[in-house]
Length: 424
Image (cartoon, rainbow, N blue to C red):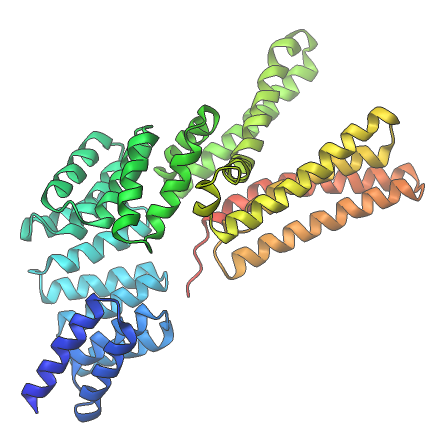
């Protein structure tokens, strides 16, 4: 019986490496039917259920593994892997540190710790964990790739490129390493070489979403305008959430101060207002450059197939709003009307929350963004209707002030919502 269980577990491990999660689950079920306290089988079952995104079942199986063998490092690692997928990063860090305390000879455990630290944007801690894993196995693929990610976000891009290049020399057929190299080249403003590695990653693993997302960015980065915006996005991604918020708030208060100064001292207006206008265009582009350039990609034979369904839907909505806004402005050449101006402004303001709906994770962040977009759409509709029905100026002015105020609040709210990572 022991020999049979052992052979079944070995087969289940092979099936998990092949991503045949249903088959692995069936094999492990045989072991647990005869030995319900088999910690290894429970831990592997957690990985099988995790591969099918049955997160509640996966956590239950991992907890059963720890219950059966509290001093088994592999069981604690299974708990950490499930908690990582559930985005309970603090708990995941605790679990993997328990595994390391029980067995510090496994590079896989340090790779998982590095992964958790990356998700927490603790780049120095991620680098330290990856380095610890590499002292055990200098060629461990997971630790090498996570070390490169940490180095990139710490601003040591040359070191990151060297690390990934060395990994590719050792294993030129690893899809994850090619995708990592592609992103390294994007961070170094080299979309052409990045594209080569993203294509190779997808050839080796057509399901690699990280490479697919990279190939979309590399295609758009051929345009110099988007290349500038991408450099800004990647730079911001290397900062902590607090630093990102500080930059956004600093920009907002800075341009508010310039606007007040221009009103108080009209003589500096010709120098200040161009800066304010350029800043406003830049802020608008930070939200709309992605869907706008996705629209351009749809004109490309290859680009339209690279876009995800969410990216296509977002670009459709942005196109519709822009056409409404541009159409309203154009119609004013044949006769000005307040409702046309209001329609144009409302449509353009609405592009910000609409462009970020699919950037928010599923759950309350996405629903909150949808609610914001719906609220602004209702306000815009009410404003246009008020003009068309001849409402009093006090009413239309109040509606317009509410719409602008909501747009200002939205610009900060979506910053928070797109960064929120709800537990699953």
